[in-house]
Each structure stands twice: as C-alpha cells, then as structure tokens.
Image 1: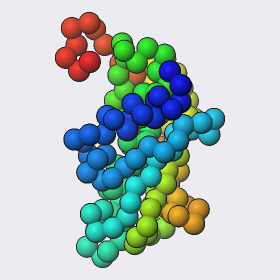
Image 2 (image 1 turned 30 degrees about the vertical axis):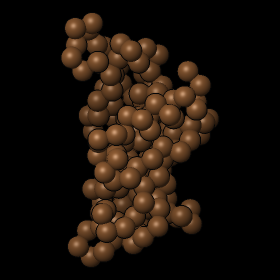
Image 3 (image 1 turned 90 degrees about the horizontal axis):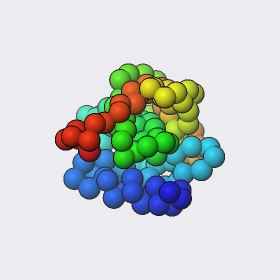
Length: 145
C-alpha cells in the first residue's frame, strides 16, 4: 500500500472517534515518520486557557499507535494496542495548531517503541512522548478485526 493510501485509510478511520472529536488529522507519512496535527482552541483547553496535557497525550498516543499500525507487515492479521505512554510537556500553547511526528525507537515483531515529538506552529517543542505498543496476532474469529 502506498503512503498516500495509508494516510487516506488513517484519516477515514477517524470518523466517530476521539481523533475526530479533537480534530486530529494525519498529514504525512515519509522517511521521517508519521505526521499529524491538532487545532488548539477551547475544545482542548484546560481551565487556564492552555492546551490540556491530556489532549497532547491523546495526540501522541494517536500518532504512535497509528504509526505502528501502518508499519505492520500483516495489518489484516495484526492489531496494535498501547501499553505505556510517557509524556513530557515543556511549553504551553493557547491557540493555533500543534503538529506531531512519530518515529520508531524500536520495531520488533511483538512490540514497538515510538518517539513522538509535538511542536507549535513556530517549530518550538511543546511535548515529547514515548509510547510502547504491543503487536497482537488476531485469530480469524477475533471480533476486533
């Protein structure tokens, strides 16, 4: 499957999910990793009017899980589930758009470790995260397929 087809698939799978609610949209897939963006406004603010760390973490986990998924050798027989997410928030954002990139630190057969870097519109680091994903083999009768 071509990169553009994978992006289309990922964006289609957003419908009716948290990703759609938060406005997360996949924007690119290349040698540097998987890229996505999320608008920053009241829908993702905490009470002080800043980007909520939970929304940032949701962007990070979304990107890391999706990157693992599009990198699976057998996506029709495998699933990705997040196991551990560690996030470090270093800069606040009030509005605009944040952009994230996910890349592999480890890509094994049963687990992936993905590093996610999230920046503001000016390229300033907002958050970094590390996500560990388990890669599951699905049986033909698995209802999650």
